Image (cartoon, rainbow, N blue to C red; front, side):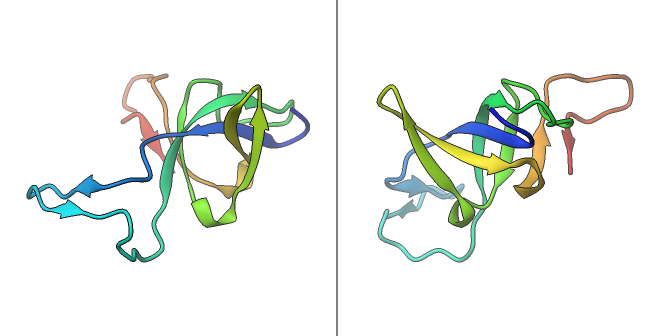
Length: 98
């Protein structure tokens, strides 16, 4: 990975979803602009805020997909990340920072 690039593996399925009330939302339903979660697989040398294994929030419409060994990944710049859910906690932190 070069510079400020982050390689992520996207979470979840593209199919049907269920709401918290149990209503089935079909895959063809039109959604507004919705952010997606992904797991960091690799980071470039100049990335400062994320590490391999962190979960990140990004806009799936601004993605560049790449296939490596028949696995599909998304290539992002660090500045395109909206949030990081980190398991590295110190005293007084919540584990999710923006």
